[in-house]
Length: 340
Image (cartoon, rainbow, N blue to C red; front, top):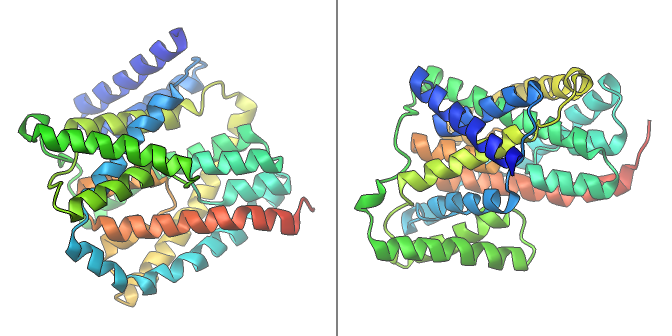
């Protein structure tokens, strides 16, 4: 309990510091940064996994509530950029595996699951089952998400002049109690149903699907209140930061540096594919960057909500990327095995 309380206090201090300094995305980047610094200082931290996952359902509801018949119809026009997603995933794997194997001497399984830009929890689960180093995987993927989520806002502000100070939803006091109750039902029921059938990303995709159905049926007209989305950001940021708890200097020199180096490669690949899409005029540049950025699904959903991007476009590409990674990971692991 002491570790949990300390973690919440540290995360809250990060939010306060970001607000006082006027830094962007205080509810997301504040907890990430403060928990990372605390971990590097040797502070023992711990989250509450069930609560963390429950808060992710809010993002699923927020994304699902944006669906309208017009947005649903526009998804049929995404196929040119969706076809580029398997190519990008392949390029990431062909770049990442040799990088981790030859530069950092990871075994094949750990190198493969470290390089795949899937969800953090999914990659840890598959990597552990395949015999990879779970601690290394945790640090590499936490670093990937941290760096991408820090770099993206800088690009959004400097290149596209995006306003990251926008409220992600209406204030709680302005929303109808019936709609709020329906959102809660969609969040919990969607999550549990998706988990029961073994759906990947159940805590986000399950609520998203159920909420989209309610929105398309005319039952929902609003996203969750801003306060709820800020709370989801807080727990997401804290969860990423806590992954560094107990990190040693040898892990900093090896896994943290390896993860940062790999993020550099990922950013270059992302910009290359974004430039291809932009040059061919297949999609708007802002949505393209958010769709192809290999960060976490939850973190990028937050950014897309705040800057007002086309949620259907961004989510569709991330879902496809995760599907490709999850399907391909066990297949390639069995195919190649651990080899020099």
